[in-house]
Length: 213
Image (cartoon, rainbow, N blue to C red; front, side, top):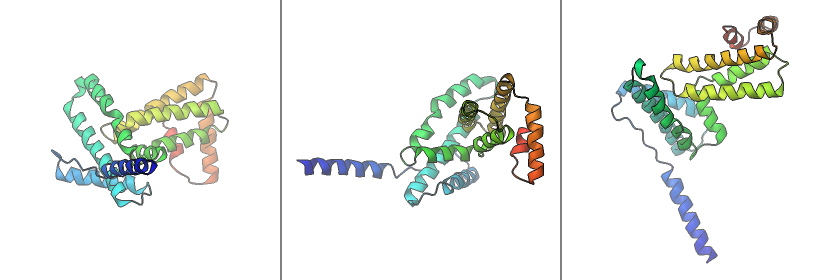
C-alpha cells in the first residue's frame, strides 16, 4: 500500500513538474520588432538568476516577456482621462507575475526579477539612504525598505522607464519628509555624505541620485 501511495505521489509530482516547464511566449498581436526587444530585455533578467535548467530558464523568460506584453496592452487601452480604470486593471493583474514565477523560482529570485524590471532602484536607493545617514536606527531602516518595496510594486506596472523612476522618486520624497519630521537635517546629512564621497574618490551614482531631492 505504501509503495502504491509513494508511486502515486511521485507520479503527481512528475506531472506537475512537467506541466510547469512549458510556458509559451504569447506574441499574438505584438509587433515582431517589439517582441525581439522584449525577449532580449527578459533574457537579460533571466541571465542574472543563475538558472542551470535551460527549459526552466526559457519558461521564466517567457513569463517575464508575457508580463511586458500584457502591461503594454493594458496601458495602450487607456488615455490620461481614464487613470482610475487603468489602475483598476493593473491591480487586477498585479499579482499574476509573482504567482507564475513561484512555480520556478525562490522568493529571492522573484525579488531579483522585480529588481531587474525596475532598474535595480530598490537596492541602490536603500544603500544610498544608509550611506547618507549612518545613524539610522534599525526601525528607520526597516521603514525605508518597506516603502522602497512598495514603490517597486507600483514601478513594476509602469508603462515606461520614466514611470518606473517616478514611483521611486515619489517614495523617496515620502521618506525624506518622514526623516525630517523625526529630526534629521537632510541638507546637513547630504552635504556631509557628498564630502565623504569626494574624499574617498568616485563611486556609484547613488549620491547624485539622492541629491536631486
